[in-house]
Image (cartoon, rainbow, N blue to C red):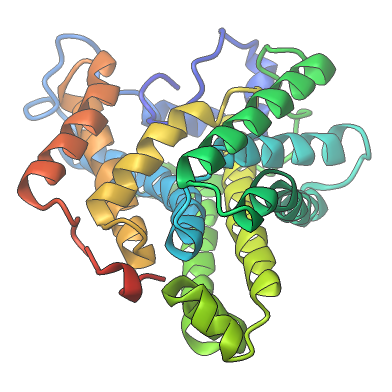
Length: 339
């Protein structure tokens, strides 16, 4: 698993612990062995196909996470630093549904998504709404969300501990797909298709539905939206529900793919979410999607051709480069055009 961006850095697991969705096919995630040059070694075509598949997979996870992050920022101009916690809670909600309630995975997934969305609404009511009513500066909202993160992470650790936890064996059906010489993991393909479908659905909701028009009106001018009859509190609640539901789903899918969850699994994605937002354009939802896949492709390429320790350096380097060359990002827009 060390070759996959976003993979948890866990202790070695027993062979039976790999049954939750990253079994034999997980070998495709590992970079070439030391000393092997992927540009000249045999099976270059297979290597390229498998690493491209890995890049699209991790880009899809990044996209689900970053779109939810960018949605709140585009509507309310706040950085929700509790979003990684929502990511983690989604994974643990699925673990609770499967391990404690005995639900099958196809029921546990919507259970976790709804639980994450409801947590997002509660987060707004507790951490953001009181500050919003007092006209507090954005920095106060960031500190408030960070406080919620610390509290929730500690509560999860009191219940489950701080170690990595695996899903029960056979939780998610595992199957492999062969394309030529390449072996692709079917679970990841399903995750990619689901992520793409959800992002298309979010685009339709924001652009074509009344709720989406209310959210865009709120993003453009909250005071004018109230005058025009928009239920601002409803639009804010919907924004947090959608954002948190997507973040929680990303956590569930990553947990299934790697068969591992832990209380700090969302923290590494916070840097990547910032990078994706800057690359795509602050507050731009299409930009967040494009930026996520750009980052996923770049990270996988860096793992193949560079030491694994440089993965985070690549994210910082991409962030720095975009800020220098195009500070507004690939899809940079004025504040009134966001969402």
